[in-house]
Image (cartoon, rainbow, N blue to C red; front, top):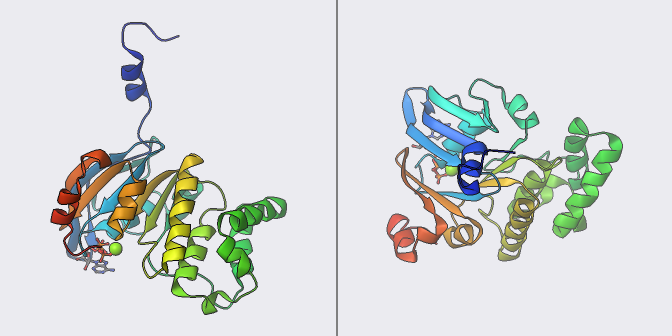
Length: 252
Ligand SMILES: Nc1ncnc2c1ncn2[C@@H]1O[C@H](COP(=O)(O)OP(=O)(O)OP(=O)(O)O)[C@@H](O)[C@H]1O
Ligand SMILES: [Mg+2]
């Protein structure tokens, strides 16, 4: 039993740490600095949309959190643990999944072999079979294409496959970068439905998106970057259409 001095809400807020906390993160590429003092938190169970114009630093934030780009200063805390110095693999094993931009699939293998190869690295044969069945339930489109070589899928289908591959084990935090880019409308629906379901199953999401309206539908919180800095950090309810179009005039 906790003491009865503080209201329950206060105690909860103080005791449950955020899933992700960036403090004064600076990062870049060689001499080019892409992020300046980036600080924000992602609370457990939430969906945070990271928005901003091209070149704002959205992908760089995701890469720093995943461990693909080092932070030159500042800290990244994931699930209560300082991960700034950990390898990509250690971060992934601790429940941090990242579906990056592009189409990171094995193009000469079938859809099913892409999935099984990835799942079997982390799971027993039996668990991998269960994960495969779950993947096909979630992405019927991939099931239809399971015998097809990944390299012959459309760009959108390859992005779905790339997402499915990082979900062998339900992660604590899933970061997705421009997942809907180049997808046909039906595939975009499938992606967003899957993200919603993944979140409802308990995974916290950090979603980098160009489809702002879709992202705002899904998100409870919004972070807007511009020129490597956080310029807005607010609940979705405070993000009006006017504000969205003012901040992001070129986006749909
Ligand atoms: N591999 C790289 N090498 C050098 N500079 C890079 C590299 N990747 C990104 N940058 C630069 O860092 C800055 C931030 O890029 P980043 O990719 O994080 O932006 P972004 O917000 O994801 O943009 P977009 O919406 O175009 O994907 C940009 O100025 C970009 O040119
Ligand atoms: Mg990007």
